[in-house]
Length: 232
Length: 82
Image (cartoon, rainbow over all chains, first blue to last red; front, side, top):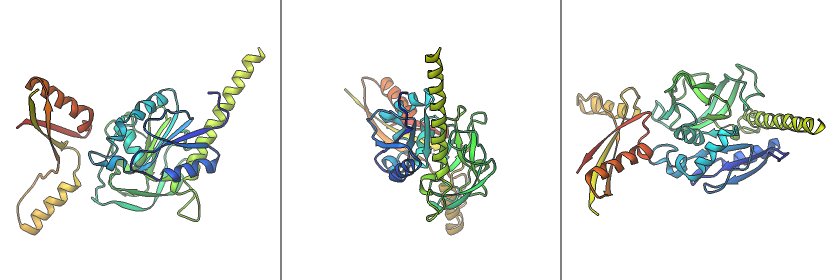
């Protein structure tokens, strides 16, 4: 951790989409950001698994992507306390990797849903939501066929975002969850698609701002600690 | 090395809702007046395994299911020889 500037990497799988939007959003809030492939190494403070249809999602959504060489890199990164955001297909990949609990199944309507939805921010203590107010209602776009979140482990489910109405049949209207340590978050809505008020909304911007802010504060604290030690 | 052929039948667990199955059941019931119920749409995977014995082949099929083919959180599977 000698880097002074927050750095982010976006993992691009065959079939990913919105990876460029994610890179744009990261650079927009100040991250030093780059793309990485499935055989690359993680060297960042934040890793984003973008949306899309990795490997065509033929077997199960996210199933193949979750077993690529980069998956073990991501697991190590998470164990070291690194921040990971999975958006849409990225959320499905994190679930297949068992880094998040639950399951994502076909929407109860049986249809692909593409629209802007209202969400409630349920947890503002994660590194990705500290720019929000608890219970705040925000607008983000969704675009998925398999976004029905099913709870499988009551204890491990930490809900971060909820739809304000039934959108796809998810348990308790769950739209996004984090792990217990709160350094991994997965959500079906696309924050990277809503960083300009001109298109949709700019509520998604604050997810990236939150992460940037969190990493910056952590770095400052680490620097202060290091300096204090040198001073002694 | 001999080849062994298998069919793996993958189904959602009974407590997991299956919207595709529900839709197919509805069409059978309403359009064709066929009194179908408990309709579940799963997957079946046919494959051949090179192994020294049937026992070893079955072990490998199980490994394939646990590692990749089946999400044991939401799905169950059954292996049949052919």
